[in-house]
Amino acid sequence: MSSLAIETKGLGRIYKIRGSKKEKKELKQLTALSDVNIQIKEGELFGLLGPNGAGKTTLIKILTTLLAPSKGEAFVAGYNVLNEPQKVRPCINMVSGGESSGYGLLTVRENLWMFSQFYGMPSREANKRIADLLKLVGLGDRINTKSSDLSTGLRQKMNIVRGFMTDPEVLFLDEPTLGLDVGASRDVRHLIRGWLDDDRKRTLLLTTHYMVEAEELCDRVAIINQGRVLACDSPSALKRHLQEDILFEIKTSPLNGLSSQALEALPEVHAASLTELEDGALLKLALVEESALGPVINVLTDKNITIMNLNKHEPTLEDVFVKLVGHSIAEVEKGGQNE
Amino acid sequence: MNNEESQQQIDSIYSPLPKVTGWRLFLKTVIARAYPRLIGQQREKSWMFFDIFLPMLAVSAYVFVYRAIQAPEDYVGFTVMGGAMTAFWLNVLWSMSSQLYWEKEQGNLALYIIAPNQMMAILLGMAMGGMLATALRAVVIIFLGTILFNVTFAVSSFLQLILVFMLSMTALYGMGMMMASLFLLLSREAWHLSNLAQEPIYLVSGFYFPISSFPLWIAAGASIIPLTLGLDAMRQLIFESGPSLGFASVKLEIIVLSVLCVVFLVGAKVLLDYMEKLAIREGRLTENRR
Image (cartoon, rainbow over all chains, first blue to last red; front, side, top):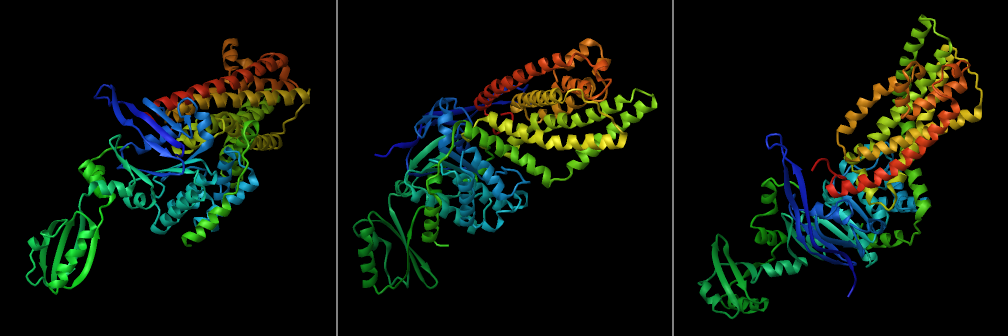
């Protein structure tokens, strides 16, 4: 069993917020995290998925030694983040989406060089790595551009290079593709996956509220809402738990008198519904096992019904989130929670 | 680029890299953080107007007043020196004390904290960069003032002059580092406090006149600002009438400046450690007033 890169035990964080003048400036308590227990193995790409205000950024701040927990403990690279921050820091780096770090008067290379020095990297090697990484994310031709002249997306690419440049044991990416276009996001996802695959001792914790990103990249995902982890597993396992039946949609030629009862009588067919369409019919099946599809197709063939289109309906992480929370991420965010 | 190509590139990028620690990391951090200050001066030329032309206007006003009332000619030199030192005070106020507030707003502070360097190295880098960049401005003001107002110097001891200048700068920027630590928890108040401190210090530190003109208790109180004693000692060492208008002996002022150096530098370290812990506990390293 590989060792743990990140571990939290009963982690909680309560913010004290001063009320308005009307409220006589009384201190209110806001629970940002509550009883978070996660274990992330070395080499894992772990995703935190949740709406704004769920507590993702608070968790990252605690793990990166920027914020003390109110309850519980957290360990990164084997060190306690509260008691041993000086041992944690050489092992980590962090990039946040939409950050405007660095200095506008410095060029992209100069900004990155400056941060490399804070990690003790030799200048010559740092400059080479900076140039290579910038090329890799498509920013090679802007190496000598002042960072104040970069667009938001290009600036975010520079930030992402800053995170990968120091080759940390554990990298925290907080909404890294925020503000990036489709192509740039793809480049970043290639970099993330490639960096992890290059050395299985590297670990990456990614927060996102893009479901597709989490599904495509993450080995495991924790779904978090209102400071609590609601579920934690691989994307496929999370979806599997959600869906007991396997769903198929089959578009066919006219049904020639076929009834749904005839299909439901077949073994391991849980439910079947038939809808007549202008140019044929739509058959929806809920199967206990995927192997039940064979007998269904045999029945259709016997009735001279042509299959025009067959789709297996895969639940998404969005479906998992809705099932767990009762609302979609967008609906929760509309509810006006604040991170 | 396909996945395979990018994977090959990544493989070639990450060859093992030795990273330095300890005092070497400290030094690298100081140099790296000083760099933006030095390079910024080259790229942002507006400082020539704000940091040279405007102080020169104030210097000129005092010079004309002194000439109108037929004050001793050395007062003109005092004013030029004060004008030059003003640049350092402004630098400490605006680019040291309130700097961590701006770094927090920009998102740099969090990155400084999570890096394996020491925050003292970051502060020292800011101080070194600011001091070197400002020294150029101060030299330009002295040069222009000397040419325009025909200032004559009579340096009695170069060695002591250099020592006083170095001690003044160390103590002044040490004070800046201490104030930066204090300001770590502040939000926009940092900006207001800097504004508040600017003008009164011009007055009580005797930037444009000898502080011996003040009652003893005001001059003694103002001596907590290292530039007060530094400027007084430098004037005594540079101008013929300096010693007769000095607040205390140069030797005593050197001793007090040395004490201030230690107090401010040690104070900065202690305060920074304390404030960092407090800010982490209260969640104010990355946001204001939660």
